[in-house]
Image 1 (cartoon, rainbow, N blue to C red):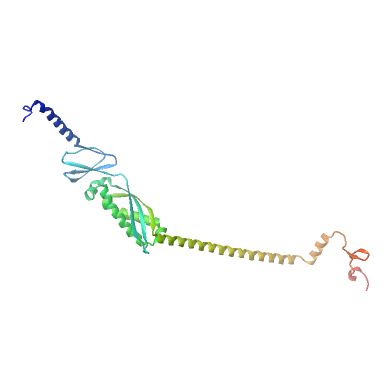
Image 2: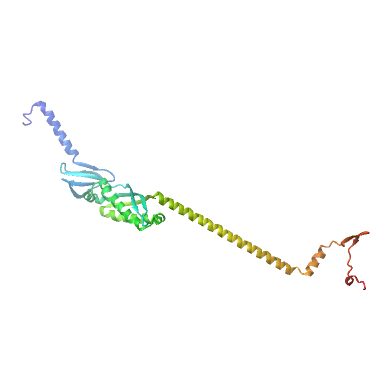
Length: 273
């Protein structure tokens, strides 16, 4: 049936259907890539070398399809358990900030898939393997004391493992490291013992210092007394006595009252024998 022979009542439906088809073709002929996204261009499902940047792009309906992937920095939290050199079991929580290389979104989509598949198939296994490979090199105490060094080592290893997949690592954070309850108690007991030993050492050192100071004071006093004895000659003592005399002779009590105490030594009084 041609359009000329079409009944009048059917023409509106034909026109409306044609407009719908044309409108659908026009709408599907363009794709919008939003900010911080890149488009993977595919012809009949085959990934093309061209990567679509932000903006509006033309595509062939029913032939070309586009998959948009975000290139924003994303955060993935991962928890894992591993063993230490001294056979302790530890639990680690790690936060990874990463993003897809904007110039390589087509290749990573072709090899792995979208963002969820990248996390499940690439990032999580890589981090788990890095953690399990790094912790057995250290004892539990070394991990606690060398946390920064362990973090740096994990950072380098993760970057190396994810680089071939066009996944760029922005930052790695060890948010938590925990051990078994028994090991934690033993660490606390050891720290308490070390603190008590330091306090006892301090008390002993303080007592030794005080004893040494007491000996030095005693030596100083003895030296002062020795010098004083050397200085106090008979002449000096007599001089000090004369300086302190008030001009009165000492008296003694007799039958007739107080009598002056005089020198009766014949050698000094002038009396003859």
